[in-house]
Length: 374
Image (tube, rainbow, N blue to C red):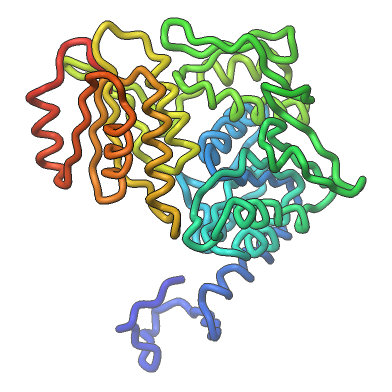
C-alpha cells in the first residue's frame, strides 16, 4: 500500500478500510526483507542470470524455452536491481512454476545482496568484461562481484558458465556445486559449431548433431542461445521444442534489431555500451551483406573509470582493422576513438565527430545513400 503525504490518519472515514502500517528505519532494506520472505513462501526453481553483456537477451531466451511447458515469471525489461528484483518477486503466484531473473550490479556487494533475496537454485554467468569500472576498478573486480552469486545458491546448486571466457574458465568450485559449461572454442557440455550467417539469420550446430536458427545478425547471441538450450535440457524440455522456441524468438528492443528505413538499413544496438558489447556490434556490422557503405555511429561508453579514454582509443585500434567505410562519433569520449582511427587508418574512410544529436541526424539525413547500413 502506498500512502501519500496528505493522507489523514487521525480522521478516518467510517467507510474506510483498515490499513496496517509498518514503520521501518529504511524502506529500501525493508523492501528487500519482505521480498526475501515472500520468495521463501514460493518453493519453486529460480534461475539468475549475471554477466557484463547479454543478460536481458539470455533471460528472455531462457524464459521463451522454459515457457513451452511451464508458467514462467521473469523481470520486466531490466528491473534487475535492489528495487526491481523485489518488485518482480512480489508478482509470484501459485501458477508460476519457474522464476527467471537477471541480476544487475555496478557496486560491490549488490549481487550478494540480491542472491540473499532470490535464493536461486541455478545461476548463469554469461561473461566477464570491462563494465562499471568506475566502481569495480578493473576486470578482476568485475569477476569477483559477478561470481559472488555462488555463495547464495540453494540445492541442487547448479551453475552454467561460459567456457570461452578466460576468467570463468578458471573457476574452481567444490563438488557440492554442479557446473555445466557452454561455449564455442572449447569442449563444453552445451557446444556450438558451424556458425554462419545466411540471409541475415544465424545458424549453428548444437553438440555436433542439431541445427538451430536465430533471427539475429549477432554471432555473440550463440552464447545466449546455448545458455537457453542448457536450461531447457536441465528442465527436461525436448530438443524439438527448444528449436521451435529459438527460431520464433524475438530479440529485445535496442539489441541489434534490424530496422528497414527508406534508403538504408539500421541496426539498433543502442541500449547500452561497453568494450565487449561494442566490439560484438562492430563484428555484426562487418558481417552484414550489403552493396552500400557500412557506417558506424558510436556514442560514449560510460562508467569505465580512470581508463575511459584508453578504452575508447582501443576501439579505434579495433575499427582500424575492420572494413568499415565511415565512423561517426557523438560525445566527448568517443572523439578519442575517432582520433585514434584517423592516426591509424591507411585508407580514405570518412571519420567525423559531432557533439550535437541534431547536427548528427541532420548529417545522416543528407548523406546516407541507398544500400547503406548503419
